[in-house]
Image 1: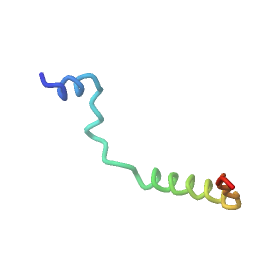
Image 2 (image 1 turned 180 degrees about the vertical axis):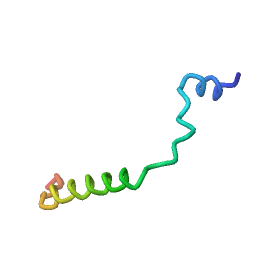
Image 3 (image 1 turned 45 degrees about the horizontal axis):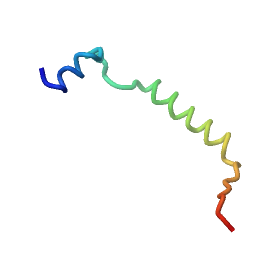
Image 4 (image 1 turned 90 degrees about the horizontal axis):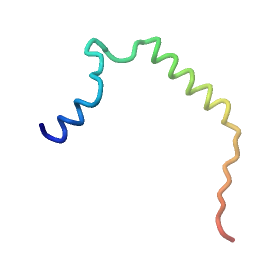
Length: 51
């Protein structure tokens, strides 16, 4: 066995029936990103530049 095959054998196989994120998954992801952005939109970014 090659190195790559040995490495692959160590990891469980991904679910072959998985078809990617559903619309509900996408909506939840977008909502969590928007919530995060709204929560942090007034944050001040400070740069510690030497004087």
